[in-house]
Amino acid sequence: MALSLRTRLTAWYSVLLVLTVAVFSAVVLWQHWRLILAQFDEGLGSISATAANVVEEELGELHDLGRAASEMAAVVHPADYLVQVLDASGSPLLKVSQPLPLPPDVPRLGAARTTRTLVAADGRAWRVTVRARVVEGLRYHVAVGVPLDEATEQWRTLFRACLVGIPLALLFAAGGGLLLGWHGLRPLTSMGAEAQAITATTLDRRLTVPPAAELEQLARSFNVVLERLGSALATQRRFMADASHELRTPISIMRTAVDVTLSRADRDEEEYREALAAVSQQASRLTRLVDDMLVLARADGGGYPVVLASVNLTALVGECVRELRPRADDQDITVRTSLEVVTLKGDEALLRRMFSNLLGNALKYTPRGGSIQVSLTKVEGEVVLRVADTGPGIPAEDRERVFDRFVRLDPARGPGGAGLGLAIARWVAEAHSGRVRIVSSGADGSVFAVSLPG
Image (cartoon, rainbow, N blue to C red; front, side, top):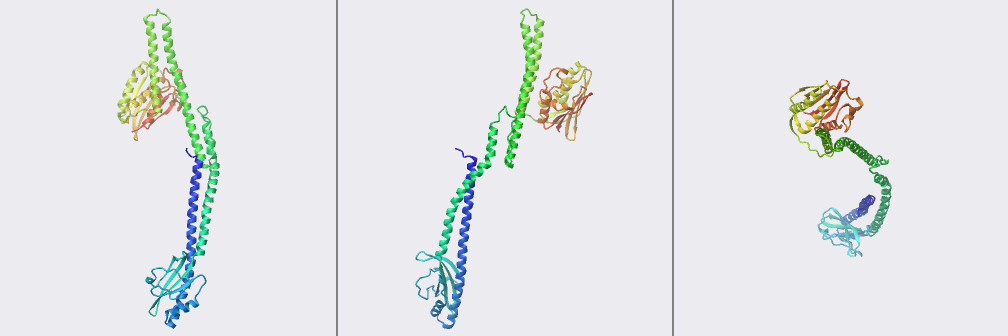
């Protein structure tokens, strides 16, 4: 079973705090012991120096190390400290009731002083300093020691306090972590509940933005995603409604033609031909519409492959114009071209479709006796195709909307079409890192321009 975020945060917070307290306690205990030893070492150094000086003075007068040691013992006898004088081999010169633990390497010690913590035979810990001296050819050592019983007890008391404090710190950390986690994650829980309540029919709802900076960013980002999803769903619904409307018309015409033709058994050949011609015309319209819808659907899903190859745009545009010219001649429309020699990397089939859609759109809205001007140029590393017509123009507020799907500003103004040609043209241009725009539009016509990286 997965742990909740609050539980995991509390666990990590508690572990981190306990580790911090444990490390802090270890440092405190270590520093406390060092300070205790430093205090003892200072006293041991002072006493050993005094004892060594006394032995040196007495030895200068008496010339006897044993008597000098006895005189030193009579003069230097600090409380809680043991002072002993050792010969060159490290053996005590005076008998004492309580022997002092000594380092095993006393005979090898030089003139420097050494201080160590040693354990006596009875198990007690001692802090011992040994100072070596050589006077009048006699080598001796002065050893001073002090038991660490009281210091060890103080340190153990502090250690026990730390052992009690660490579990208490863990308890307070866990309790505080749960409280902070509950309070800090409460807005996140509320956001989760609000998100679960949002469905496909309530995409207009948004999450409440909490005051916390991090959660505020999360809520705003989620609201942006909801905005995009709502927009995408609205576009999809509008697309489905428009597509259904566009598909219904030719299907209705085809069904009517068939029903009327079959309503009587004595139809002649001419009537059947007219009915089949109507069905064929609407079937072609349906084919073009379904094909355009499939292209846009695959483009939206990222499943339309764009195959790049070297394309001779001059030849491609020329072919599109030649295919258009018979229809233009039927409507008494003049088509003029001005094409520079241009090649680029692109998908030939998609580029052909884009140019054909733009030329077809210009032909559709150019009145009888009008003209269409097609130019292809390359300027500053950019290929520009312009299609200018002498149609009625496009209002300024609709010059971007005409590139949306199923948009026809005035369906009665021109025959056929479902309003997908310009949408496909824009997608093809964007798939080639280019753009399609309306350069100008007015009563004397419109100019569409395609810009592609050259």
